[in-house]
Length: 119
Image 1 (cartoon, rainbow, N blue to C red):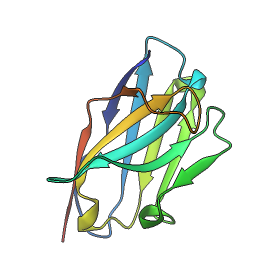
Image 2: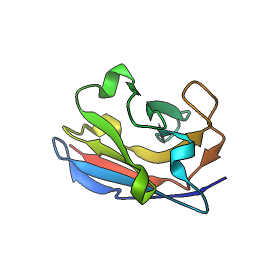
Image 3: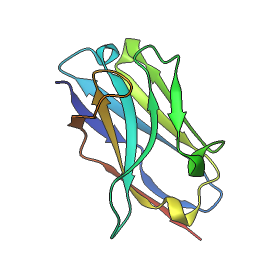
Image 4: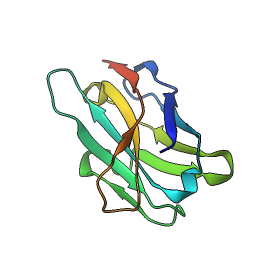
């Protein structure tokens, strides 16, 4: 399994943007589908978006469609999450994860990065 480290979280005002990065080490990220989850205080971890190994296929939950965009740079062993038009409801710890391919359970997780959106 690759090791995953997220970065790019922080405090932003509503309507602002953040770009999260997920760097992989100890392996080849292109061998895995990538995904982002988030967990808000007192809530269960929630799937947000996923991207196929080659980056050609992506999925989003309805609440982030049109605002968030997942991408990847396999040459740099990184997956990204561009978040625009952020809302206070987006406040959570964001985790990147990998699975053998889209549709398979995610079995490898980063430590998370905090995103706080102020109103």
